[in-house]
Amino acid sequence: MNIKHLEKIIENYQPRVNRALTITKREYRQRWKKVQKAMKAKGYDLAYACGSELDRSDIAWLAGVFDPIIERYGILIPVEGTPVVVAGSEGGHVIADCLKASGAQLALLREFQISDEDYRFAAYERLEDIIFRLVPFKPGRPLKIAILSSSQFIPYDHVQLFEGRFGGENVVFDVDLLRRLKYEKSEKELRIIETANIIADAAFLGMLSVLKPGITELDVAAVGDYIMKRLGARRTGFPTIVSSGTRGRTVIGPATNRVIKKGEWVSLGVSPTFNGYHGIMRRTVKVGAEVIAEEKAFLMALEGLYLTVMEATCQAAKENLPANYIDQKGKEYLKWTKLHTDDGRRLSPREPYTFIHNTGCSECQEGYGAVTPYSEEPLGENVALMIDVALTGFDEQGELVFPIEYAVAEDCLWKRGPQVGDFNQMPFNVQELVGRELTLIPQDRINPYYIPLGGD
Figure 1 (cartoon, rainbow, N blue to C red):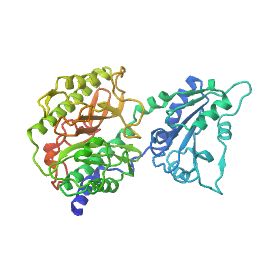
Figure 2 (tube, rainbow, N blue to C red):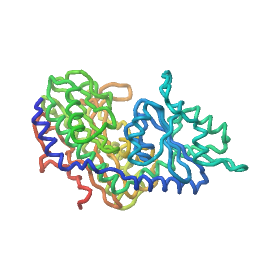
Figure 3 (cartoon, rainbow, N blue to C red):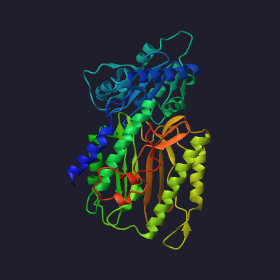
Figure 4 (cartoon, rainbow, N blue to C red):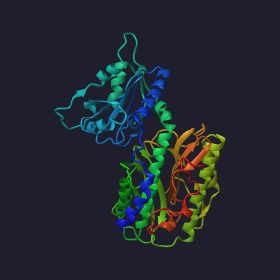
């Protein structure tokens, strides 16, 4: 592994990374006002969202909590005034540091501490006391509380507390309220996401350069992780993906100590988190051997799907079509795409998931904005999306019917009004970049859909 080469990649990409590009206190206050306006319109006195290291997006967007650790946490949003983040005593130290970005307040709850620890000097408060400090009790008028996060994330005892104290009829799950507000991106958000994808391209280029038979999956992942951190990515949207050989069936499997063998296919994926927002780059390549005709046909089918979905997304944006137009076009393409199997049949390859999903303060767990057959509304006005097209080589019985276990191409897109551009410069076909010590993507190989955010 040539460290000097990796440092040269970092040197080349560093000028495009503005580490000071962050969400300001002013923008956080604007977000609170948007949420509070929506709450007021529905008659809510208080809103509550909850999070953890797995589901970070809601409170990251509301209060700048990008780096939660160890314990669960939540946020209480009054219909007027400053929100309060509630946390455990240990993770609360980290969250207190995060909240300097937004100016939200912090309170500690015993319910959120590590279950079998004893924090003698923690100044815990009661959830009920915090609520009445934010929303003074008015005799004869019950408080109406909206829960903004999925029921999968909210502690059961908190739902019980709310319903027991304020009445089940006054506690409402309204997850769409926050999800729809987060879906539309500000100019600053789009620029931060653009930077995250500059880092993604750099990290992926480094991983491709060291990919060869005899290297472990973790060694390849270490290169991507090193470049991401050196360029300012504090964490990742998912553990860096390097899945070789039959591990391709894991689809999103993180790297292991497995040694990559000559002639194997490897799926690679990075998702750097830059100042709270996510980038992406995923591709599948062959290591140390030529791509044979049957494999090439499988990859050409994937490329056709990629182009079909890209063009449908551009058309849907330009003509303000229902978003499910994109899904329909992708599925029509697959319906008419037939490949030869090892036993002489002609079958359509299978896609494992939706072609387009929303992104932001998570890589894909925004809860709203994925393009499905049921997405009857047009795409948002100013949004960040990820095109995530993939084909599996095995059937519903788990039998391998095509020569590649799994192949994927995932990029990040921006949409402003009728225009769509790709944040990533990485081309669809990266096979010729494997094992080459390149420090920039060659100009003649840059993705044709790439458009810098400020460009035409």
